[in-house]
Length: 519
Image (cartoon, rainbow, N blue to C red; front, side):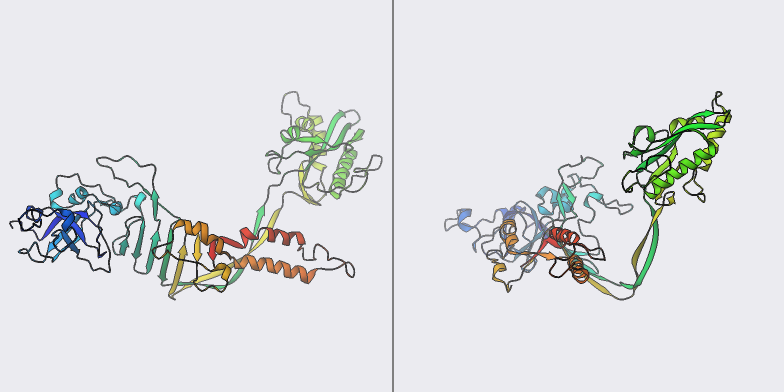
């Protein structure tokens, strides 16, 4: 035998070993072995169907890896073959080991030619392009975290499952990628991308050890102020319609407009020139006209009108009361200010502007306030009763303080779209599970058509305690109007039957996790 190689090439011909020991029938790529066909008494070759997988079969090779590590190549793949002695190529002491792959994602099946490209005989074959940048070590994003890294040990499946043993972590993953329907073009100088996409919703089991443990060190209350830009509900508009400079008196009116909500009617955006023309609608019975009033009388009338609207009823002697019966509700926030015509006259900068008239209106503008102590005059927002200007809400948030200590801590995590925790010894006959014919794995139909109906959703403990606490507080704080009467629907603490009913109605979504199931 002239070939001096220790390890020889072969192609897988058949991998269905009748003994299920991982043996292969191979096509050795040496001339001598290709001629090693058993013959009958007359020296004629025996038909392959008669000797295949028998003791006479010269093409059966044993796996070099022990039986306890099962890795059987696919038909047509390249394998390395090793003879125990070069003088006895026909003996039974011959072995195989899986050949090389040219790309990590070809682990599902590597064609013979691609394997050859990684060996000396494959120098004439175009080599695969790099997946990792050889200068900076950066891995192409499309395969990042999909395949094992140097320093980690791993067992890879023939598809998208594996087990990775890192220094302090064990990862068992199924569904680590999904097929990519859009494959970027590749060519000379480009990375040959695989037709996969990393899949965040994989099913996995992770066992981890960390050197430090995060421990709670108490709580701290933090107060924050937040400004909420509310929509203006009403606009109290005052107008100066005619000014008599001889008598220093004027005519005008004051009235209320209901403001239709849109993006221009928030407190921060509300303007006389824009929102008041487009989104304000006069309320019947609110208009008060005045004639021949001095500036002081005008100011007194308008201020009293605004104060009345602030208190909930406009009741000025000599004018109709508004509302005529009862008090206002929901008027806040409201804005008071001049109408557009009055405002334009006051701010007119054209050559035709009359400074005396402008000064008359400006003097009135500067004196119109909700209260004398307010700085805002003429045009201002009343946020809530007796309060001028936008107000912030103060909220208190309790945070849990923590720190890391040098205590080793372990974590165990199992994840997937749907989790089943099954026991063979459930004490409830209604939820006993028959796992017959699932020794090699549970098929999807078993999950969807059988297991779901015989399992229960897991309970979120904190959400359940929230419901139970509400029920307890209602029972503790409820009152009866009289003996034998039903309890009031609300307690002094603000808990109502309606709020409890809402928690119960949302229980299937908030309290139960229907994707984590037990029997």
